[in-house]
Amino acid sequence: MSRSLFNDVLRHLALIVILMAVLSPLLWLLLTAFKPYEELFNNPPTILPESATLVNFTEGWEIGGGKGIMDSLIVSSISTVICLILGFPASYALARRFPPHGQLSFTILSLRMMPPIVPVIGFYLLFQELSLFDTYTGLIIVYTFMNLPLVIWLLAEFMRQIPKSYEEAARVDGASWFQLFRDVLLPLSLPGVLTAGILAMIFAWNEFLFSLVLTGDAVITLPKALASFFLFQQPNWGQLGAIGIVAFGPLLLLSYYMQRLLIRSFSIELGGR
Image 1 (cartoon, rainbow, N blue to C red):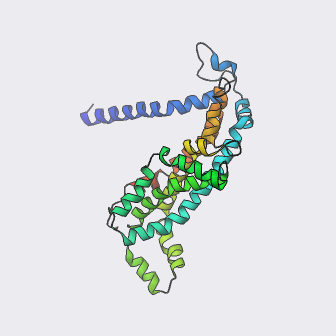
Image 2 (cartoon, rainbow, N blue to C red):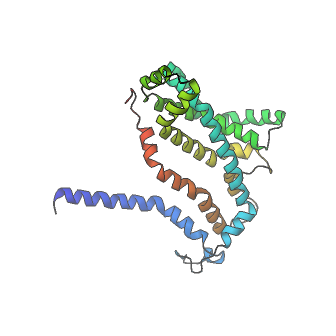
Image 3 (cartoon, rainbow, N blue to C red):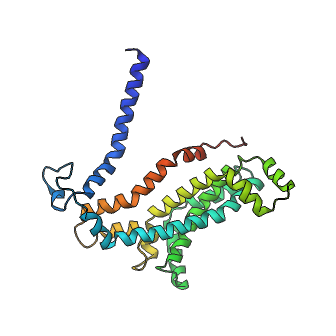
C-alpha cells in the first residue's frame, strides 16, 4: 500500500469517526422518540426500540409541543421576512455608499454580537408600557432587532460582488429603482438572500432568553415549551425526543440542501467577480 493511499484511508476513517460522533446524539434522539415510556428505563438500555410506538409524538404535541412549534413558526418566519424586506435595500446602500471595512459596517455587525441579556430588561419594561408583553408582535419586533444587523451585513458583502455596470445598464434602459431591485439585484443576489434568510430563521427558531422573559402563557415558543417539560414533573424523554425531531429535523434538512449557498456566501471575496 502506497503512502498516499494509506493517508487517504486514514483521512476517511477519521472523517467517519467524526461524523459518527456528531450524528450519534441525533440518532439517539430519533430512537428515543419511538420507545415506550417503560422501555426508556431498561437496564441495560436498549439501542433499538423493542416495540416502536408513535404515542410520544401525539402526546408531546398535545401537552405543549404543538403550540411551541406553531408559535415559533409564526414569529420566526414573519421576523425573517421583515428582516429580508428591510435588510435588502439597507444592504445595497451599505455596499454602494460605504467602504467594506468601515466604521458603519462594524457598528451594524456589533449590534448582532451584543449579548441578549443586555437589552432584555429594557425590552421588558418597554413592552409592559406598550402592552406588547406576551404578544406575537412584541416577539417579532425583538427577533427582527436581533437578526436584522446580520442580514444587512451579510447581504452587503454579497452585494459588493455585483458589478456596478449591471445597474448602470439597467438605468440607461429606463429601469426604475423598483425594477432595478426586482429584475437585476434580486436575481443576482438570490443565494445571499436565501442564506441570510435561513440564518435568521434558525437564530429566531432557537432563541430562548427573549421568549422566556418577554412572553407568558399566550405565546410559547418551542425552546420555552421544551424547557417547561422539566419544571413540574420528571420529563418524558420519549416526548422530548419526538418534539425535538419534529422541530429540528426540517431545519437540519433545509441547512443540508442549502449548504452550497452557505459555503458560497461565507467564502465571499471582496472586490467583485
